Length: 83
Image 1: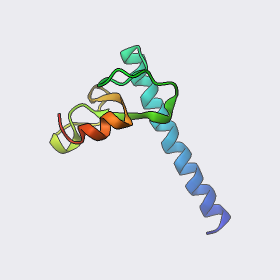
Image 2: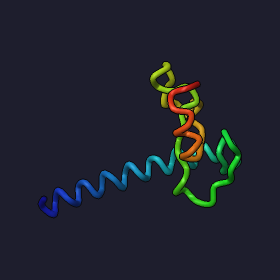
Image 3: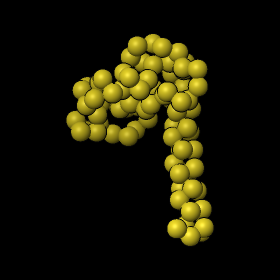
Image 4: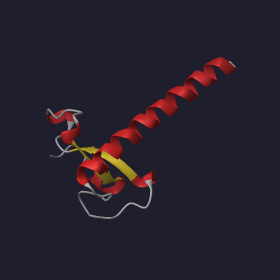
């Protein structure tokens, strides 16, 4: 892999990470807290936070901010594609 290709891939990953972080920050501001909506555990940092679709995409949900919530990785995995 050339250095240029490597730099492009690295930049793409950073952009994706920054977008995810920006969405999380919008959800935090909307909900006014930084904890899992399902079990209530308070997050210490962004490492265990996932973005959960309240109504899953597979069930007709959207990526709209109103259909997103923060969840710990355990709760999000347990919920799967359930509403």
